[in-house]
Image 1 (spheres, rainbow, N blue to C red):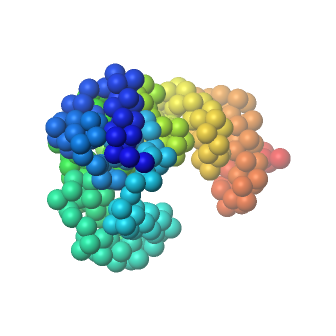
Image 2 (cartoon, rainbow, N blue to C red):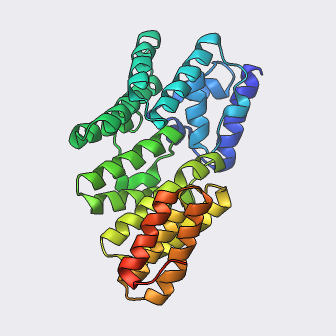
Length: 303
């Protein structure tokens, strides 16, 4: 694919969405750099290209046949590090991340953000130093959004990594017993994902988790009606995007809130729904917890 076509794709997408060059490239590259890319005078790195396309609600994957050998290595190492983190292999992730830092230029904002984000993830998986972890996540987001403010999230266009970092900051706030701040952050992130240009891939990956956490935290704050409303949205999102892993958890959140509101008869069908969904997913432990909850609260069997 030629440089002209890459730049043309970016320019056409940006103009169709009504996004200014300044808003799109903020914190990633200079406006002059974006202008050169769009005019075919400069080749973007894969990191830059994907981040800019993600901010416009595109994955960028379909356009990256132009990658160099080093960019391919960059992408492969990132993928392996993320895979280790998701599998809980934090020592392996740390070793590979050390190698990544030696190989790639950390003056590149996106490389530096990835390293900082990953370091925070490793620390999160291996310790309870939540203040330090929060500082690392906050450092990561301010690399590309220097004046980050959750109350003004509408001002920005976010990449997949930026969305993930903000979600992680909210989780840490909850663990630090600052649940109201965590709820505020997830409401802002939900509103962003509802109203801005977010790819279906990103929404399917992140949206159900945001709604699950939000419904859980609202319930703990005794904001039961709000929690039920978010649970309904979350249930529909899991089905719409085919992301069923969190579906029974979200259904249980609704059942729990209905019980707290004194609507026991309305709660029971959702408890049974969550129970059978867990069983269908071979999660017997979670299913047994719901069975116990049913007996403890209603003194009747789940089946």
